[in-house]
Image (cartoon, rainbow, N blue to C red; front, top):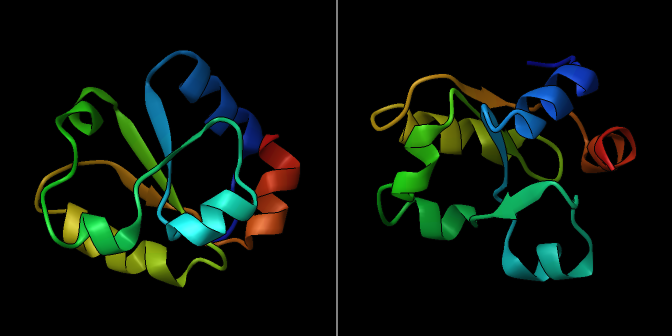
Length: 99
């Protein structure tokens, strides 16, 4: 997904039908993060199955700094979850649109 609909993302999260997962590492998260996101670093994600809470959402949106790591996470998560949407846009764009 190279273009994204911020209203759709916000709406789905508000309705508890989706979750926004920040897969950046802790140091990146600590510097700045999107308030509606949950943090689950890619390094942790690749070592284990995703948290069972992720399965209760219809859509799992993934984001990182520029989008590349979301594709790695999507590939890993696809064996556990359906409807994974990597957000392939720069972090600053996401932050501006979703905060």
